[in-house]
Image (cartoon, rainbow, N blue to C red):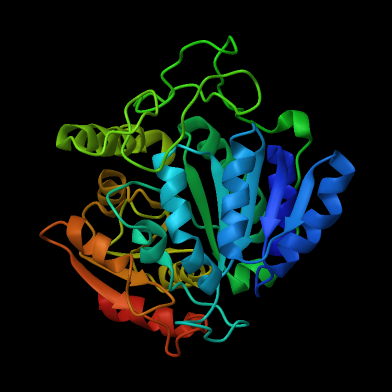
Length: 371
């Protein structure tokens, strides 16, 4: 099936029953599938007037207890940023799928680019943490969408699935397991409706009271205490709020972070990449090893929070790290921050932005690095 279709199937398997969308390429097939699948399950598909309304509707649906998702691409993702921040500060679980296209601005809707990596991390204002997953296959469009919902429910936070046009539109075989074989995490809610709960600022993640079920809860985007009540005059309150929101992610990074490594134990040069670029990188590393080069492969499955210690351990004693991205350099800066003193970082953009790296181009770069 197609990557976007696999994403929709993953959302349904994870329990998504609300989807709001505004039409945009190359994410349209996700909406097409959700509009067909959700009514059969008594779920809700709604086409909103724009992307701001879409993410707003998703947040509202989540507070009634629904697992909720939206999908978009670059321009729509930009419009969603303020409400993504609102979802962060109100600890609202939801999933946002960004099938990246070539930009900036309108760009070329039908071409891929990994231009939204830093925006996914820092697009909304203020200080906060976010979870971002980067699929590199159609299979992972299914599995990482399920995982996005699980992480969203576990940590009461928006989670972003950051794909691109290549992964969204390619077709591959997908293994969809029986529902009983999937690990699904559901939301924790207070045991007794109406009880005086403290539903915010718990680094171990507090249960979430739901609208319309008798719970007493106040939800605001302003600085607030653990009960949700505003405090917009006290610096210590914003300090407590920011640290609590950050720490519920940072303190669990070992459970959140995901990377894939191959042949790193003896590697002199490591190719580090993510998303669609990983497909070329893996092939080039395998070819390089057939040529006798001690090359290794590190793929970031989770981009944010950036797993510094885990990535540094994977790099190990390699003398050089080649970073592949379909942009002018975004995740490479995070790699440069954690690289050991004995290592060197080289950035390898595609020869033409918005096209995939050519395998022989990557292979040649690896062989030059070990020469």
